[in-house]
View 1 (cartoon, rainbow, N blue to C red):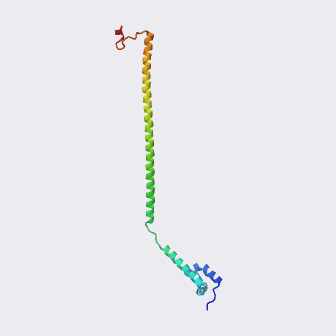
View 2: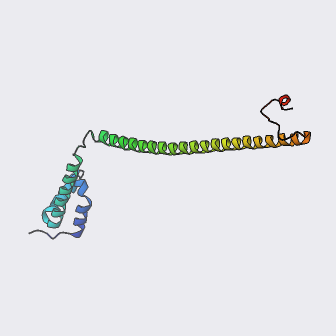
View 3: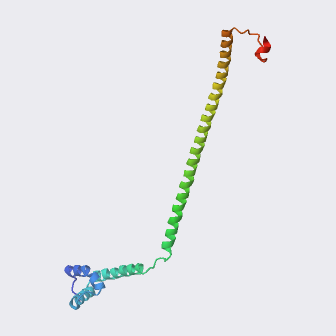
Length: 156
């Protein structure tokens, strides 16, 4: 007949599962541990589940990662960075192109206004020159019928 499981013994089992798994129990503790497991189905089930979990963890630890995964990740990161650089380079070229065209239009406008102003100034000077000639003629009492195409001596 099995003796009833003591609640204190069950807590000892639960507290020392790792020590049991790693073979760190002394001979006396190991005998007490095993004796309790034979008499307590709950603790036996807990130990069994614990060992299944540990073996699952050990199985996951033994999985080796792909040795080329680091190279692939680095290549993908570099290609994404290069793509972003080229996009920013294209955007920079578009902005610089727009700025260049704006300055060309501004320069052409300034040149055009200066040419028009110079032409207007020349035209105004020409009109003023004609007025000055007329003023001089009237001051000197030259007749208006003098043919300006002929030399002065031929007109009189």
